[in-house]
Image (cartoon, rainbow over all chains, first blue to last red; front, side, top):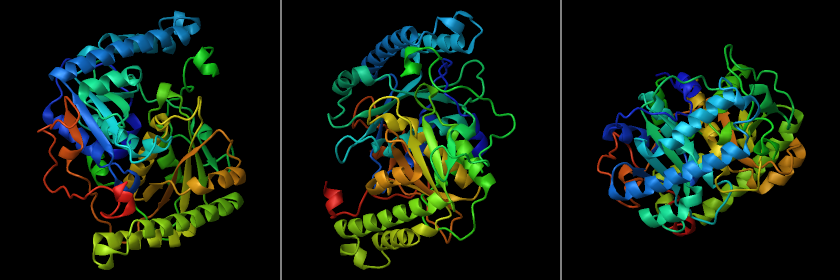
Length: 233
Length: 233
């Protein structure tokens, strides 16, 4: 797969077949992750892989329950079943079905990877610069070998319990919960805001006339559905 | 370029020829950046491109001065000229030469991109999950079209002055300063710690025997030179 094509077509994949992810596939995507840059090349990223081990089972149940609680709250708060969400053909209703299916089957996801960060100083809003590039490499490499995945924060409400179960040191935050598997079903294109809304030149908000999307680019609005509580924050 | 090969060979590039980066090249790498995932697909990333505009000149000088001050302090604190650094053929001395050259020529870098984040809530250590995947896509796409770049935090000491010059709103942090250009000279391979040190299964620190590096992988220790103040933190 071509590098630019891979970047253009890697999207969040939340539905997986029952096919297992092999050791070699895991090694490939995690090695790709480890090629990412980090501050001073400290490589503070650590990946805890959860498959069918005894502690993985406990951790995965914690994550699944957290994911279900998270989505139930978000579905209600963001009004996924109101407005256009009442029309089952709407993008909003499709997204709600995908999310419901994702959390309902979370415990059966072929692989869960916890991306952790070994801090060398206090918590910092910029520390993710040393772990999220690795997560993106992982997701791109998954696409390259026919897998799909999604980066989530479903661990947040149960981070302490997960750390206890898995022996993660207290000063090591989990920065992402990534699920991986073989994509099931069909998936639409990556949709983003038009590039002109995201790129400025020479000053904030200043148009960059050259920042044009290639022909055929598909667009979407950003964030939660309009009219939701989250959208108004 | 192949996706996995691109991921494997994208390294930080700090030396550039004088060749300009074209509008089309910029559009390509920024569009790639915008394909990245973000929380709830909010797409809170914004990219301010600095080339030869009037405000860019002021901003770039601020960044160059900050980069030189940062490196002078780090060179001394991390002992780049002591120990093995006294041997000009050592990895430490090579890194010091590259960094000195980078900051000396910072004002002539073909393009500077400031990656900013529009927050929808307070500062958070995990917020980078919605901007650094885009930065990594940008760097990979640069590699795909023959450019090179590096993600830095040189803006940190002058973030307030930069915001004032460029009109960046007070609640919008700059998460990365990325420099881009056509690579000059030869560049070594990506070097990281052995994968076994970065990947665990079923629990923190538990070996994952399948997590092997491919044949030919080049290694390095992590972080600043051993014996430096930073390394001991």
